[in-house]
Amino acid sequence: MTKTTKTSRISTASPVAVRDQSPAVEERIYQDIYDAIMEHRLPPRTKLTEQVLCQIYDTARHTVRKVLSRLATEGLVDLEANRGAFIASPSHAEVKDMFELRNIIEYAVLDKVGREASTRQIAGLRRMVEEERQSYLTGDRPRWIRLSAQFHLALADLTGNTLLVDTLRKLVSRTTLMIAKTEAPGHNACSFDEHDTVLAALESGDITLAQQHMAHHLHLCEDRVRPDDTDHFDLRSVLGKG
Image 1 (cartoon, one colour):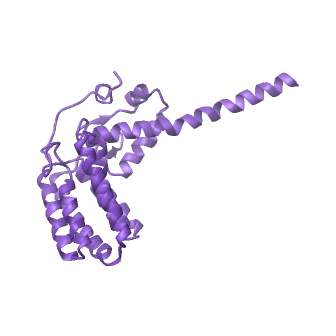
Image 2 (cartoon, rainbow, N blue to C red):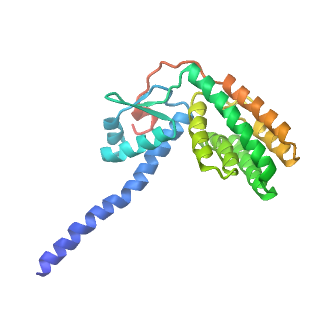
Image 3 (spheres, rainbow, N blue to C red):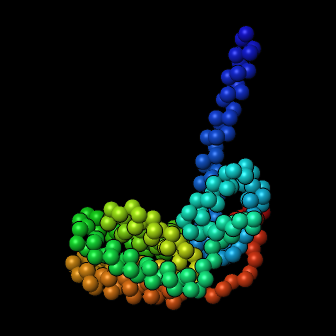
């Protein structure tokens, strides 16, 4: 009786330990791929082979699929039937349409935020821009790019409209991954200097000026869209797993 009880305890404890590790592995895979995409180490149309990812991270296929599904929901990966997962590669026509839609949405966002947001909420955005600036200056490119994109989502979040934020999240992700990699402020993926001008206008209570600065910023972002890239990359070398 005693031996049977001990065996039961061991067999029921083991699966729990494995499940507890899964979220950590899943998040690590997600962050590695996200950073590689945003740094353009994995360019558009790169294939994310499930088997290779399983080997790199020594994990189960279902964990990899959950990550790919999450990236697809965010607009960073396209899942194609019978072909697999690829880094998203919007056409030039789609990029044009997405920036047009972003202009419409973010114009409306600024109108609502400019009328309703509190001084404390605007101050929170100001801190985010300063973190974005510091990340750039200290060479933390992944954090800098992530904050650049999150600025637009944080601004939209102040509207309290969840559907709007979800729609904008996919647009921001898909447009950001198509912007050329460059280092100079004013020519980067999403410049903190341009974000600063939008915030300054909001802080002064000039909604129209904030909208004009945002439209100019998005126009510059669209101009930075990279040309088609046909290079192919090895997942193991890019993700740094040897």
